[in-house]
Amino acid sequence: MNKNEFLTLFDYNYWATHRLLEVAATANPEHFVAKMEGLSYKSLRGALVHVLAAEVIWRMRCQEGISPGKLMGEADIPSLDVLVSRWTAEEKSMRAYLDELKDEDLNQKIKYKTTKDVAFETPLWQILLHLVNHGTQYRAEAAVALTAYGHSPGDLDFMAFLREKTD
Image 1: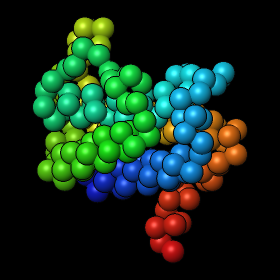
Image 2 (image 1 turned 90 degrees about the vertical axis):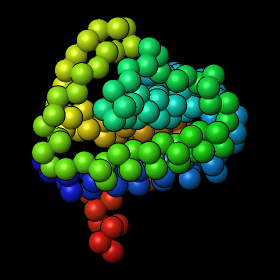
Image 3 (image 1 turned 180 degrees about the horizontal axis):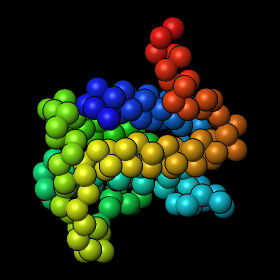
């Protein structure tokens, strides 16, 4: 893959996130924090915070060489407004980082530690691909929650993004 292909994947990533956040804003605020069986992080907020936390920690590992010891959690994000604000800032930071990359940078190995203090070394392109895929998984869980609350975000898949982009 090359830089432009990754930029397209991250355009998709943020398109899907924006759609989800827009629909979340129309739901009852109580649904944002309500516990729901079947979700990995037990609530709409939990699923969305996990996606954001992963984006933040991976960008910090890749761009800054910093491996934080823990992910942000639900307690760090008390409301949807705070989540949107933090995600807006993170998207800006991630896009600035991606814009600086060159094709050859994608093969560089990133050294980092997990939140359990285990050291790894992974090519940047694999981390970036993981990040988009990871977001898809947990946005799907958030979409299930929203749909259950009567606020389906509709089609969030990559082909829908591409078709909307060309319309």
